[in-house]
Length: 446
Image 1: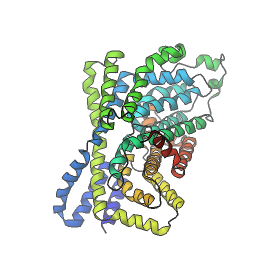
Image 2: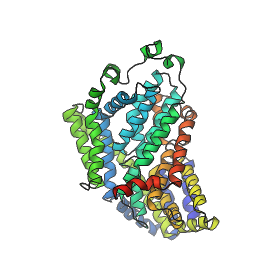
Image 3: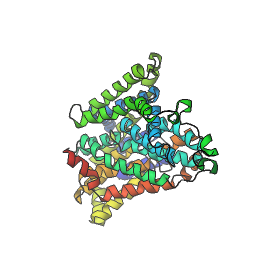
Image 4: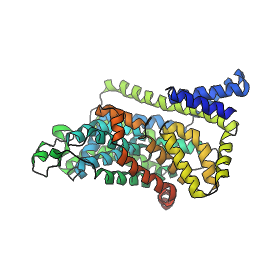
C-alpha cells in the first residue's frame, strides 16, 4: 500500500511537470501521512537535515564552486586552446577537441551540465562555423559533457559511496580511481563516433583550400591556430595542474576528497585572480552566489531524496523489489541486463543524484547477492546514469546544449544517436567486464 502511494504520487507529480526535488519530497510526505498521520511529519526535518549535513557531502558545493571559478577565470577557454593545439589540426580535429576539453574539465568540475555550459559556449559555435550541423555540434557536446559525472572527482561517486555505506562499504577514493578507465573508454568511443559525422562541403576542404582559409580559430584572434604548441601548453598549465593537485592529493593520502574540493576552489580562485587576472574583486559576489544557487539545487534533491529513501527503507519496499527480481531469475548476467535497462529508463526521467538515492537500495543488494562487487556496481550505475544526461525527455545536458546552440530540444535529440550508441557500448562493457572498473584501483592498492 505505502509503495503504491509513494511511487504513484512521485510518477504523477513528474508527469505534471513538478521539479524532481519537490516530487520526491511531496510523495514522501504523503506516504508518511498514510503511514501514521500528521505526527509522522516530524521525521521530515530530522531526516532532511541529517542527510545534507554529512561532512563527505561538503565536497559537492566546493567542487561546484571550483567549476564556476574556472569559467570566470578563463581556465576552461585555455583548456580548449590546449586541446586544439594537441589535436585540432587533424581531420575532425575540432570535434575531437570537444571530447578532450570536456575530459579535462570533467576532471575538475565533477558535473555534467557544468561541463557542457563551460566548454560548449566556446566549442558549439566553433563546430557550427566549421561545417557541422547545429544538431550534431550540440549533441556531441552534450554527450561529451556526460563524462563530468564519471571522470574523477565525481559528485555521483561521492553520492554512491554515502548511500551504499548503509549495507556495503567502499571508499570514495577507490570509486574515483575506478572511474578513470570507463571515462577514457567513453572518450575513445565518442572520438570514434565523431569520425563519421557529416560536414558541409566548404568545411571539408583540404589544407590551403577555400574551406581551410575560412576556418576560424576557436577563441578568436588569439586562438591556438596562431600559437605554438608550447605557448598553448604554457597558458593552460595552471588549469592542467588543477586535476593533478586534486587527484594527486587524494591518491597520495595528503587530503580527503572533501579537503581536496576546498583546495581546488582555493587554487582556481588564486589562479583566476593572481595569474590570469581575469577575476576582479567585484565579481566575487556573483561567483559565490552562482555556486551557492547550483549547490542548493543539488542539496535540496539530496535532502528530499533522503526522506523518500527513508520511507522506502522503513517499509521494506527495497527488500520486496529485490526479492521479486531474484524470484524472476538468479542468472547473474540477466539480472545485470535488467539493472542496465532499469537505469537507462530511470535516467531518462530523473537526474543522477535522485536516481542514486532511489535505486541504490533496490539495485545494489540484488547485484551483491548474485556476486557483483560493490565497485563494479558503483561504476555500472554512474555510467548508466551519465548516459541518462543525454536521454530525452529530461536529459539535462541536452537542454544546456540546445540553449547554447539556440535550437530546439527535438533538433538536438535528432543528432544524438551515434553518440548514444557509443555510450551504450561502454555501458555494456563496464557492466559485464568487472576488470575495467577494478583493475586500476587494485593495481594502485585502493
